[in-house]
Length: 623
Image 1 (cartoon, rainbow, N blue to C red):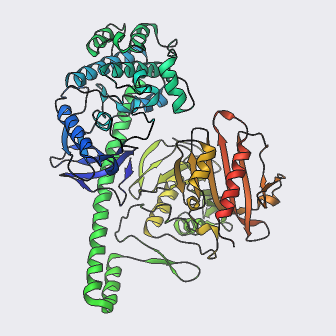
Image 2: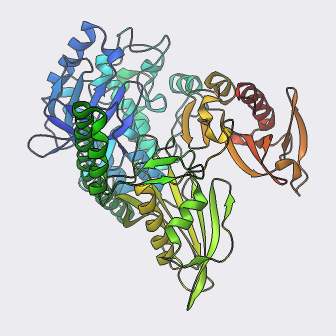
Image 3: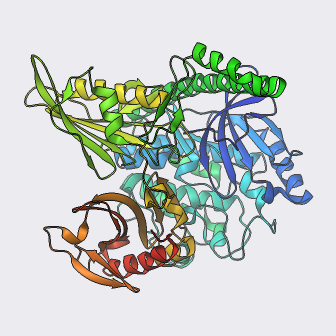
């Protein structure tokens, strides 16, 4: 789940939106609350896909059919609007993890779990087909697990999009490629038998942990679906015949949903989730409920801020320049302060309530002074710094001492993925804190800002003996509270690369040419990553120890007309190439690094990194 971005709707019909649960090519799925107080899952179609009246008519027909679904294994339609610019459909919200996540975390299901999954999917399919629907997009992500059994979601959208010219590009296939049917893979119109084939693929994945069709690209997977024998040898014997019957190439030879339900009922095991799966489902539901409550609280807080800002603007508009004194008094009343950077210029304003949220994004934290943040947060509360704090990578570290207590070392990282994402049950400025369970003399805790471009803050603490987790949690709480109120900023030169959004110097076409489709982008304050089917490419803009003066003896490599450096072998599947942009001291400099990581441990990553770095250097402003 992610917090609503400024462009996301706050209301769809009578339903108040709470958070974004996912985005895709067809649209986005939001979590909302109905006027009756019920949670609803709202699928909002991209407006460009709904550009034709034919789509809206089909979408309305699918919604009308979907309203007939009342079975216990499907999600009930509760509201919709097909006339608005971006049509949407609201169904009941099901608080359960998707099947793919459960298998990734808990491993393949045992035979009892497979029987419960198979009977639930068959029952859901029978209900969907009796309503005249063909799901046609069944996959692990459209199957949610609850304590009582599976629930199927996402029906109706794919059928409404089918045949709509703006909806898909030439050669595109609606559905999850690894779980689609041969007839869909070949571009033929699917019938209800296509859903049965998908269930066979889902059950294979649930029992083995892998898709029954191999392939590194969408085209390879679709070819395998249409022409190769599914990999079902590892499916348990009590389920194998059922799975094989579902995945015959000829649709006419597959069982109906009712026949599948009868066959699933004969699987020789008690239909129940394993204890591990049950625990995971309960933990997911607890986390989701906590997240919903926290997000709604934050939404209310944001509404308060917007109300205050609206009043401030109204005062300025009415009173003109004379309102400055009024606003200054109001700011003091609300506790609004500003930190000034080394040049005396004000940094970002603090939040205007006593308990603000951690709502800073990548753009807000690009010029964050991590050492100043650590000093302001911990000094006087957890002791004083024994030595000057040391900037390192995308953060800062140092040792703090307090009279009568052992020294503790702290390391703050900004924009680095957390080393462990297990919820601790605690929060920092309304954001959930994660980290591995203690006790341990070294302990890391992390928190992610609640915004549309989130940034992770991780704080590691170390003590000579005992458990460092309590002091790590205390320190991260202090850091989060400080950051929520004000962002202490550095003041690099106007030409500094640290001021740049790294995604502005990474050409998407150049990155996708070496990473492969789909080229998904993610970013932090100083990194931009493109993940493709062949490789991932990351660009980092940072100040640190000069790579050309490293004691590890880096290799100089020509990159265009420039010289860069690498510590990676030329035939490595993982390679990082660094260019020194501007020295800042004898042993430090502003630098740009491009890292390439090939899928499948194939060699040649350095060639990709050097190619992208050459393009990045050409796009950077000269110092």
